[in-house]
Image (cartoon, rainbow, N blue to C red; front, top):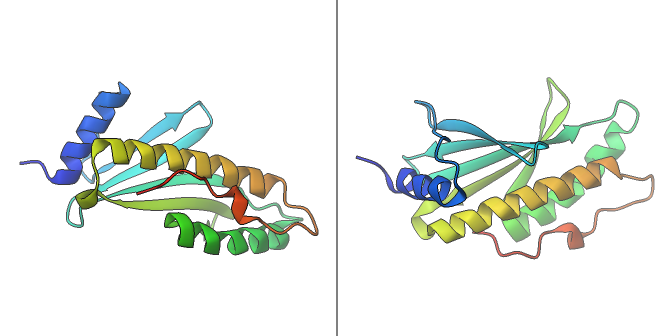
Length: 149
C-alpha cells in the first residue's frame, strides 16, 4: 500500500512526463534539471514529507569566509520566507540547499509549485555565491516571489 507522499510523487512524475523516475528502496532518487541542476529527492513516508536538496556550489578558497557570511545572512530570510535552508558540507566545502515539503497539506499542483520554487531558489543561491562582492549584502529581494508550500 502506498503512502500519501508516494502517491502524490507518482502523480507528479506522471504530470511532468518523467515516469521513469523511481525512488530506490530507501526512497531516494535524483533528477537532472536543464543539465545544470542535480536535485536529490527523498520520500519520507513516516513523516509524509518530500525532501529536496541541490548543490548550490563550492566555497572559494580565497573568498570562502565572505561567501559564507553572505549566504548565512541570506539563509535567515530564506528560512523565514520559504522554509528552505542552506548548509555547508564541511568535507567538500559545498553549499547545499534543502527544502522539506509536508505532503499532508498539498496536492500535486502544490508539489509542482514547490519543485519549481526550489529550482528557482537554487539558481538564485548559485548567483549569490558567484557574485559575492566585498561590500555586498544579500537582499531578501532574491527570494522567489512564488508561494511555496
